[in-house]
Length: 445
Image (cartoon, rainbow, N blue to C red; front, side, top):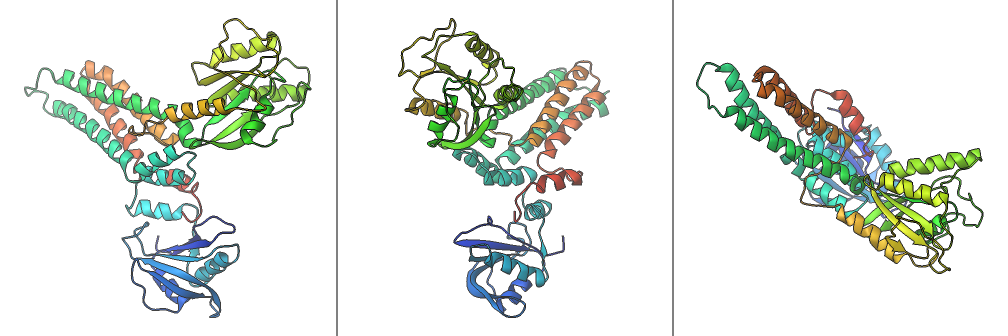
């Protein structure tokens, strides 16, 4: 941690500016070497020339010095804002390395901020995910968590468990003393309240995963119902091949498109039917997998053809998945003579996928907007979800020994619950987990 690290903090490529960030004990000394200046006022932007080790001019840049602990890492930090592009920033970075810095590892700035007490793990994860946010609603939630909203929730739950644990410990230590007769009932009531709160948080978080990771929308149907045409219209360009030959789409096709405030991933699947063609069968299997992996499924039917066994197969898939995810049942090709009829099948929308899909876009936007309840706490990573699941399990396993007044076993489960909740914000004991988590961050972050 004594080494001074450096990295380019902006994305690689052509841009108006690029930022090189340094953090560590010698950050200011290195900045002085590169600028041939002796004085930098903390938090003031200084326009200055940047030189290499041969005193050759590299660029004119803005240098800002953040004196520790009043910086992101709580160490001395220097940011050099230079002209963007492929060459200038790399040249300045090399100059910082020659002047005594070393290249930062991925996520090392955030890792230092964590170890120096500037942020906890919940805030670090929010920072990492904010960079890759797939919707405006997700960005708002993550910005709130960067300011500590999840940390406050976790600390409150942890304190509540410790408070309950204190009741148990008192009962163990002073078993012969007179204690309130309704003590078990009081503890039970508090545990029930905590259990309900955590269950609600867990269910809400899992139901809103698409908000964080980006919604996946699968288009399914038998061959030639217009799935590829629908994809092309949504994208506003011809991404998928469209023809009258059944089985033209033989694999899943994925593309991103923005709908409302959400960046979503649309998956055009191979037509689902019985097939003797091995390649087509593989594509159909991938289509079925795409249904399982998607948040929203658009089931497309051809209104210009009579219903057949393949349509009934799609109807069966709808029934199997309706309780698991959002399903939109859509009749396509309504500009043609209508021949389709299938018992027990009601359509949410009717359209012509080659022309106007406005109604479908609005329906998708409404579904995705409905997933956001901004005033509720949300878990934003599988690590956080697993910790809360383990906490809930320990609380659940504590109920029986509480009823039997086996308070040592009861206290053991509550102690485990406290550890699981604490792991969401600051699990110091697991260096391997921390290395893995911060290693997934962007370089320069």
